[in-house]
Image (cartoon, rainbow, N blue to C red; front, side, top):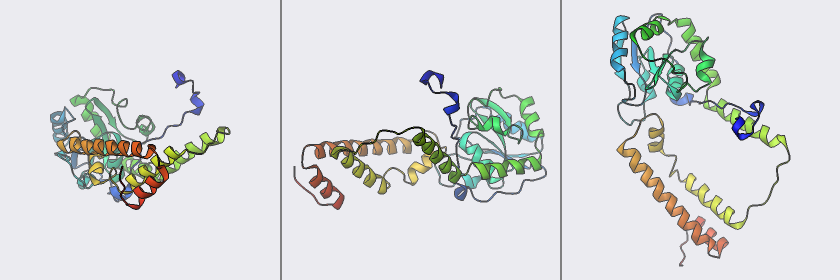
Length: 269
């Protein structure tokens, strides 16, 4: 953060977090790996064949890619999978579900997530940066052979303890409190335009026109799709409507128009 003039001591890392209610309970770690699968955006892992061959050499049944299209139940598909090849938030979800995880994505292979290596992976959110090695049969064999049930259990326990969404909310709140405590920040009352915009945005969000199930599905690691383009178009249209409404409110009679808008009454230009 030197480029921004911020001291390193002032920087706080806020990691990915996961919804444990959605993930569900952790499965027990097996003494020996029996099944494996890729838990990633569809088609992003370019060495699927190499992974399949490595699993075969170790006597592990390879289930292929668990995610093929948009769905609400992507985490549930991890059921019956002992070893997941994943990265980012999906790696966290797999570990919380009780899977051993070899960190991989289209950039390469980071390796098996163990208690000794956990902090290094977590520092980059189990994403690009951790994956510094090109995929090879030898590398995959080494990482699969490194599996130990007791260590996998400890990794799962740490993820569920330290990376739950509730813990993440506490962390970001603490960051905001630290910033507010640094000095006496100037305060001012919002003007009419700002109050009007805040009220419209609040109502817009309450109607769940943005955070609905279709957007949750898109966020859960699904990649570009026609549905994504459609939803982005819908959002763009809603944004344009909001901008138009703000312009109307600013033309005078702000408070009356705001009350009319929030109570559902109509009015003429």
